[in-house]
Length: 267
Length: 278
Ligand SMILES: Nc1ncnc2c1ncn2[C@@H]1O[C@H](COP(=O)(O)OP(=O)(O)O)[C@@H](O)[C@H]1O
Ligand SMILES: [Mg+2]
Image (cartoon, rainbow over all chains, first blue to last red; front, side, top):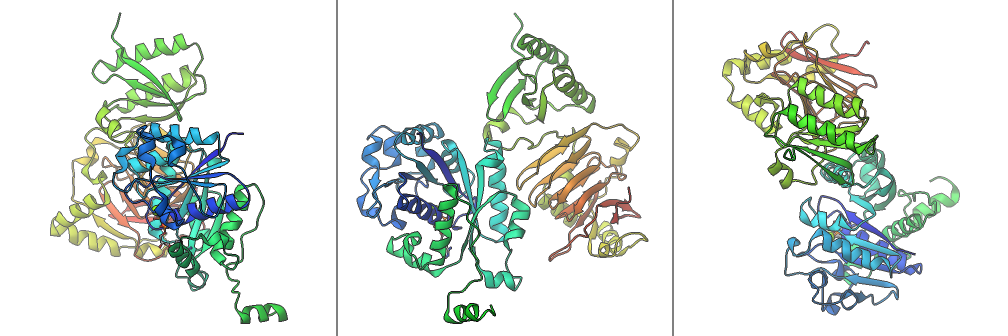
């Protein structure tokens, strides 16, 4: 079985690509899949930090591309998940240090040994983006429900289209949704975003402090059973594996009052 | 042995045909015909993009090319890209409809929103005053939210209308897709979109623009000066709407278009939006 390559991309920076890559990858590995993560954000690497693996880096993506080491040597095994590996980015070079052809070759080599390969893309539409998509079969587009992020996601989807990613090879993750703001009409809701992007929805992740806590600890939230964002990522993982999972109710607060209300049937 | 005037390249999006831009178009199309004949139906139904490498086609030349590709050889014409080789190199990943057809001597008003703004800023105070007056004009039959669509007059170019007139038959470009942010279509003729035009996308046409979907980006009809051109959309809520040398922009804040097709046109020196009545 040949593994499948996903690129996680967005256009705009800071919308949650790295967070999504780390959580989806960890979630897939937690269910026993063999997963390789590639940090294609050369010069601004941080997937290693989010996974808490920074101290293990010896070789990176550019070394592999330049043939200075073998792919196997550069892959770092995760400290929690037996089947999760990271190919880190170089911190000291720039995006032109790797070419799309080299990226494709690396992705293809990983297909033999892994079920899933996730490529964390840098922001922007320049060479870094072209590198990130070069070896990918499918694209996961991450956006926040903000007009500017959606605009950039739309741009990216257009570029993905012209790079040959057909409709059924593109999927959307809406990150950092704040139900209370949506209710007040201060934030785009899922339908507003979908209306413009019209890309199949892979999942919606609420804005959640546990992401920040887990990121700082280098411990993906997807493993935290009490994290709502973690729950959203676990759902995304199951959808990637082909399960039908309904969108979780983001309005559901797990506070005592909400539980009480549900119990007595008034919420 | 004649020089290579036509070259083919396959890509993810189908076939790319590059046409030499120095030789006469007749010679180039002749060689294209021969090559396609030799291919013996191999490309039938294939999506193709024709790159003219900077050559700007007249409407007649465009029709001839379209005829050859679609009618004679049954290929599926995706786009005619008229960018120069350099421009292509700079942005090889660029969307397929980028700068498709730049009308020769294209009006400056067809530039970006910024340019438009600058132009308006530089225009004579008289034109500015007229623009302001026009924005307050309302007409019977025009929908009420119309008053909020401010009409400005870009710098007058009186000669411009003379170039075209609705009497001239125009080629029509049909796009079966949604235009996304950053994608733009420029076409010397009418443009019909079977899909949405998202914010950040732009259509510039010398004729009419019809969107069978939601128009939220920028549309410029009659870009060579034809004030009879119209912009029609199934849902019309453009960021900015230009017809000939008139510019109308969306009111600031959220706009909810009525659930019905509408047409924008120029009446009495203002861009007005009316319900489409067939
Ligand atoms: N669902 C979320 N809730 C709260 N904070 C989030 C969420 N997703 C991402 N963040 C925070 O947003 C910031 C940017 O996320 P990151 O994944 O690094 O974005 P990108 O890789 O797209 O630049 C980080 O500080 C991250 O902790
Ligand atoms: Mg990142």
